[in-house]
Image (cartoon, rainbow over all chains, first blue to last red):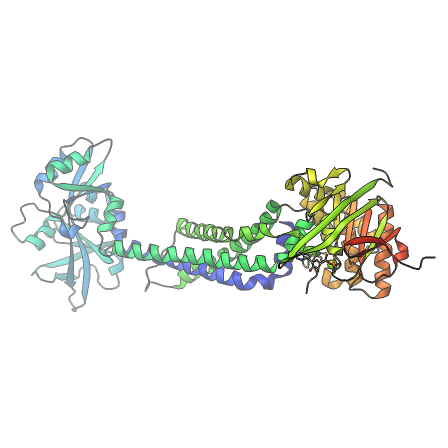
Length: 365
Length: 233
Ligand SMILES: Nc1ncnc2c1ncn2[C@@H]1O[C@H](COP(=O)(O)OP(=O)(O)O)[C@@H](O)[C@H]1O
Ligand SMILES: [Mg+2]
């Protein structure tokens, strides 16, 4: 890259424009990654935090708690399996009112105070600690600290129930709604009144070893999915991820096209220089290495700058926008952009190798 | 490799091109020998085929018929890849208007030639400095082309041509953009280096000046080479 690097250094201004466009694409891509991640977090962070490996839903429920109703028989079938720990979970989206009339949306998770979710998750554990004395209590996720205080009574709309807030925890959100934990019994009473008959939404599993879950599903008319697969049941999750993936896909295509177009024009502009390189004895491989190396340096610089600015902007976005970036997401989207750019340039490589050094002996007119 | 050895030989080279429906003969059975340490000028009207002659001699272009022999290797018996190799290892060009790389300093124009060959080491760097010094550019090693005069640029191009130890140097109107005084300096530099480095040099020039600096003067007319008509002392 003897010539390519010196070209970059000496005639910086030539590369500023396309570099800026590439940096902007990287910036946009970083912001989108952050938003996509943020949205995903907002959709499933509560579920992700639960210490379970699988969820059992009613057949046809499409991983949605709201569409799934299971009974004690399922709990028994799965519970009898060696290597499987089970605990029932009730989940409903509810609307609650504070004493001063503020209304809050809750993803209300009812958990068994004696089950593994309660003993392992700090949140539900707090319900268990009280030994069922505060059977009617709510543990809310941190997001609600500004709205509600410990000791407040929340009225669940549509019922006569008043539930006291007994504490806060990092509970996260599910379906973009803050999570509230209560006991399974309270949840059943809220949803089914006195006629719950042990019903719940889904069965949380912790599976160790080789268990034929499919066989159990067939026996009990259920669908068991790994935790990550259950994310898709969160309201809006599939549509959001599909949209984000589509937009990011477009960005990759745009990046490839921009780089490809730039590289083509740049190659045409440098025709004489490249002919000269070949007249001095350079092979096609040498010329291609030099040009692609130059492009790669430009791409990396632009992407690093764009990504850094994107990360900075994300820092200052505040809480109004769900934004979250992991190193993996940032790295992944940058590398994908760089690869797309290099692929775009590959299309113009032919033009480079076709340049004939004989043109250096022709008079410029 | 000794002086007087024939480094370049054109053997009945003919170049014909299609020009619409007609066939145009640019070179018509040209014969030419050039020995190491010898400078030969080729003059001729614009469009007479001088650049074409150099392109064929330098294996950048294949003749319609006839052959080019460089250091004993017959171009017609070589594959395209082998021809590129012979060109790389034996032939160097000095182009019209120098054609330097705008982003490279004078010294780097020469180092690039070594880099292309994977031979850019301390020895190559020393040779580059030495060559530029020989051509009176010792003080201008770090200048970009834009910071050099036309004559200086052309002398950098001559130094660059010598960088890879060629046996044949082909110069295409190296003085055409220069005033007479600078043109003379460039021609003198070419003649000096031709002898010092024992290369066979063909210089194409548009106006027949400073011809006395060369060993032989030829003129290209109607596709053939003739002894140039000039008043020599
Ligand atoms: N590939 C080609 N096709 C058609 N005409 C050509 C081609 N190459 C050269 N010519 C013609 O041959 C003539 C000689 O060109 P050139 O060698 O560049 O002359 P000079 O260098 O003496 O000015 C010109 O008329 C040019 O247009
Ligand atoms: Mg010419």
